[in-house]
Image 1 (spheres, rainbow, N blue to C red):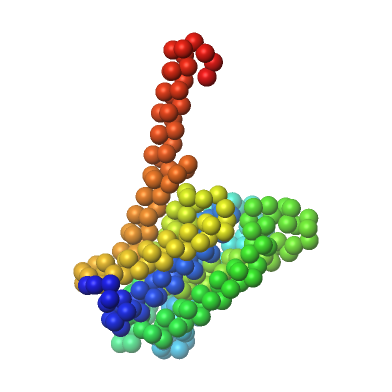
Image 2 (image 1 turned 60 degrees about the horizontal axis):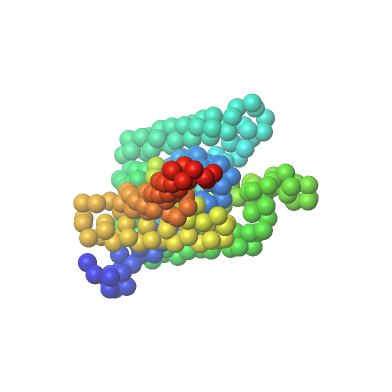
Length: 304
């Protein structure tokens, strides 16, 4: 396996492009969900997408990615609306609402998946791959669909960056300025659904949440500015996707989706330890230096 294979090998090129698109889209949109303290939202939306995949197959009898992704997106969006409705009209906490919807939708999806598997339909084979992803089956047409979804999601973020930034850091102030904070929040949640749609074929519903959390969490260690954080998160996500695809392609026994998540987790661990100012090693070094300065001041009899 050489770097040139990324451009010459048809399968590896498609898998790497699809994984990079997932990394960029998940990294940028996931940054907003993480900063709004809604990291579990991505997990809930990803799990809520499973019944949509199954219902799309039952209605169309086809495993065409476009239909399955549309079903997943609709189901994920309904899951998001269910969470918002529960939070608005009940006294349940956000974690409880997310956990409840995650379990309900995923359980329904598993029931449908079991029903389809026992139906005797030979065409259903491989549908269960949406649980953990099946990146090796990505073809050029799938990459085109993923690129279109990514363009919609990233385009809206670029267009409404100022509004999203304001409701993320100070929603009360945004409301007093007349911004429709409720609709903007719903739009951000809908963008997370788009990110889930982009990643379903690559990492599946179970692992998708990691691509919405790990790259933004790693980027947060390196900067305090939102613009730089979005850029770093996109780079970390794309890097994880491409490196994971290359490692998986070099060993037939390694599934692509889980390897991508492992690489993203490694990037996060490196950032947690080595990032300047926020990294654990930096904090340890700073603590040791202050202790040394304090002992030196006490030895000289002066106030530190």
